[in-house]
Length: 245
Image (cartoon, rainbow, N blue to C red):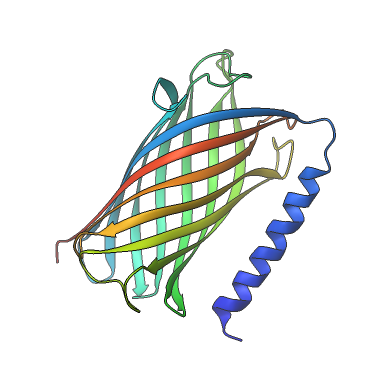
């Protein structure tokens, strides 16, 4: 059994355990929302071993009627080889009041993150394993106070070509991923932070540009560890990779 299979099996077992654990909570309150995220991801390769990541996400609640979040993220990538990349980066997030249990007012968040991305394959599927550590400085809405939190994220993603054994320019593909978020350290009321499950139809227009439209189910535990958001989210994404070498 290769390493990709082992990691995948471990992740599925961990995910099932955490989901069953939170399902047993009898005191949680359910908050259903319908959101839409418009997303841009870019990577500019500036040298054989280095690239720059850029990202912007406009997240809207009630599909497109009101704000949910604005996220801006950047980072410096070191490519150890064609299958392994390490990233150090920064993200800024504004979160707005939305849903049946909103925050008092819009509040900002600053993040520093460290990331490792591993690429592999399983049959026709191109796999990505993404491990990310985040240090988060979050303003407590309506108070002016700030809190610090740590979070670990793991994403398993697969891109599967619709036509043939490999994905070529001008061809469609199916994208699937699941990402789990785990809080740890001081200021964390519950270990489970959120889980995102995603399925989409993508199109590889060229080696540099792809686009996706898909559905994401986001199960998110609010900071009080009592209210759980069930966010049904339409996602529209554009991926642009530029080689400046």
